[in-house]
Amino acid sequence: MPYKTVRVNPNSFAQPRASVLVIYTGGTFGMVYDRTAGPQKTGQLVPFDFERVLDRLPELNRLDFEITLLTLDDIIDSSNMKPSVWVELAQIIQQYYDQYDSFVILHGTDTMAYTASALSFMLVGLNKPVILTGAQLPIGVARSDARENFVTALEIAAAVESAAVESTDTNAQKSVQPVVSEVCVYFNSLLLRGNRSTKRESVQFNAFSSENYPNLANAGVSIYYNRPFIQPYQPNQELTIRTELDPNVTILKIFPGITQPVVESIVNIPNLRGVVIETFGAGNAPTDSWFLDTLKEAIDRGVVLFNVSQCEGGRVTQGQYQTSKELKQIGVVSGADITTEAAITKLMVVLGHERDPINVRKLLAQSISGEMSE
Image 1 (cartoon, rainbow, N blue to C red):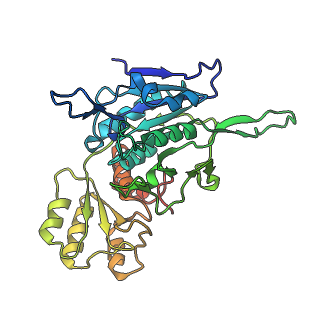
Image 2: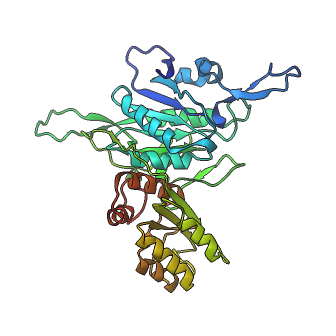
Image 3: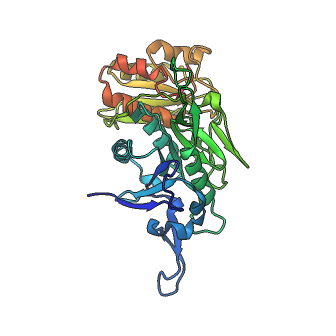
C-alpha cells in the first residue's frame, strides 16, 4: 500500500532549486489541539493532518524549493521506536533516493539520537542530507519550537554549494553539491552529527548536545557551517542499505555496589550477542575477581562487550588505569568517545551482518560512519 503523501511547492516554481522529502514518524512535533474533542471541549492534543500543513506553517510559502510530505502508516510516539521502523525509514530513503535531493525526518525527541545513529550505519554510501528534527512543544502550542526547527532543517537540507570538477578542460563548469551529506540532528539552532548526538534536556528547548564532536552548523541570523567537521561529499557513490539488525544486545550500567547476580543475569541472557558496558570515567570498572571472571566467561562464549563511558564528555582509554587495564586484557572492546546511543545501534547493525566475534570486535573498534575518534 503506498504511503500518504502531500506535495508542497509553495510558489509553484517552474524549476525549484531543490526537492526535499519529509518523512513524518510521529512524536510531539505533529500534535495540535482539537477544540471540539469531548462534550466539554477540553482541547485534547491530537495528531496533525499534514494535508493542511500550510495552515499551520505558512512560512513554507517563502521557501523556494519543493517539499513532499510522507506520513508513515503507523504514527508512533518515539518511545515505541524499534529497529523495524529504522529499516522502514532506510527503505523509504532508498526508494526515493533518486527522486529527491535531500530528506528530513520528523521524529519524537526521546529516541531521536538512537534513530539518527542507526541510520548513519544503515545508509551506506550516503551523499545526500538526512536531517532529523522535532520539537519539545507541539506545533499546536503558541510557543512551540516546531516551526523554527522544521523550517531551518528544511533550509539546511536544501543548501547546496558549487564545487570544482576535476578536468583538464580549463572551461569546465563547477558542479553543485549539498553542503551537508550525512545523517544529522537539527535542534534549537544547532546541527549535530547524528551519531554524535544525545538528548540531554526534557524541559528546555536545547534538548540535544554533541559533547565529543563539534557542531556541524549554528543557525542564527544566517546559518554558519563548520565545514572542516562535516563529512566530505563523495561523488559517484551509490546508496546501499543494511537492513539486518540483531536486537540481541543490551546495556550494562556499572554502579558502586553492583552485585554478582545482577551482572550474571544480564550477560547470561539467552541468545545474547553483545553488551554495551557503561563504565566510570575513562572506561574504569570494578576489579573484583567475580566481576572480571563473569565478563571473561561471556566473551569466551562469543558475547561481544563494548566499553562506553558514563560521562557525556571524554573518552574510554582502556589501560590508562589498572581498573580498565583488566578489561582490555580479557577482550573488552574500547568504545573511545562513542555515545551510548551510537554504541548500541552500531552493535545491532554490525552483529546483523557479521557472525564472527573477532570480526565484530574489529569493526566496533574502528569508526565506520564518523561515530568515534580513533
